[in-house]
Image 1: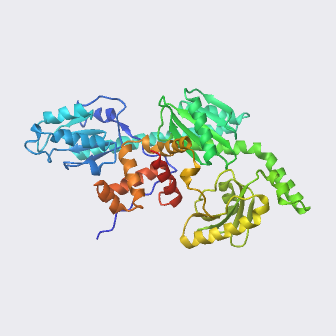
Image 2: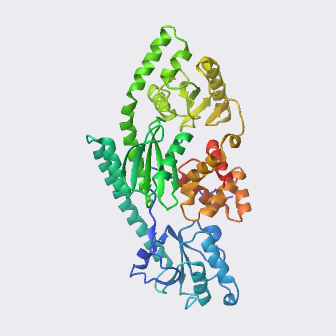
Image 3: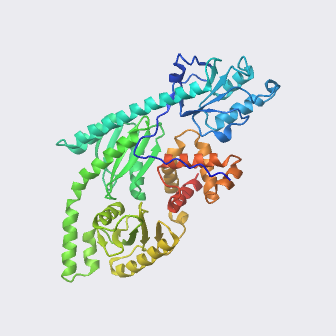
Length: 493
């Protein structure tokens, strides 16, 4: 059996290749393409080009492609039946952006029934003249995409430089927000720990939905969240720092591929700037330490540390060396500066504002949330949980079990979380096919073959769609905690 093709790695540091307008391809005089059916929508974009002579190209499309065909698959009596309606409807169902029909070597003209079907289903139909090869069309698409990518990278680089310059001004936070709002053509808002607006710049008609998304992010202790307002405004929220309660909200009328990268740079800069507001926490920790050394009980000093309930986390690095720098980085990721580096394990005391999440490169054991008087027992729980995590090669194991997750979350909050989590997939092309594939794949425990059989598609199509979902969500679908959260979200749909 031939080895399975490897799924190409995703490079999150760079914005994805932007799509190109169909109009830009039609403007290429060397190709002499002509649109003869379907809507002439200037917003129609292409994510690639694919050639297929299959009667049902659905299993081989990811969405957003220009499908090229010479009509080899068309039977002689196709015009008298439903062949073309079935063919075009399947392309539309797969998310195909347009259909290109070659006039050579099989057909001299585009079948009238195909033209009618494309009009019925709203699929742009291009006539490809005999002198234009499909490879030339595909090459032109990739050339346009490369130019768009270069322009987008230049835009992102310029935005990064302007944001850094704004952060060095006397009024850094408002300056960064103003520059970000200008770059995305919308509004940028800094929200405080209670979800209240601290500073903002730009304009939007979706202030209320944006504030709601920020509060949802705070309540879920997530890193990012996205949604779409009722008026179509694209919303995004970014947690600042290591769970300190500040959130950057961004609302924009459109979402270009590089906007996430630009907003992420602004989030990093604002994390550093808002960290200055936490300067009193260091004094409080020092005071707590002094009181403990002078005989105070843990319950008396815990309020100085920032909470009444706590998690104890034990962690071991997967590959990196165990050193103070790595331990501090872990504490930052978990949202706590209370880190203890032992000879073979890192222990972190984390306020129970939200359950600790998996950290890349670490294996974690997490105790039940405990009051200060029970910290010793929680320490033992975390040690046992870490042992189980290492034995089962699981990124994170929590001590004990409680009520089912579904029973702990109110319905409205569960649905709001599902919308925010799955928004990147819903916003893309062929969202229905991607969500159906993700749901089936998760229900079959990640089996490529069983999912392919269930969906009647090729196993490579399943791999491509799951890779697309992972790229859109910006997450690792091999992580059991990620799968659990996605399955919970899909159950709300």
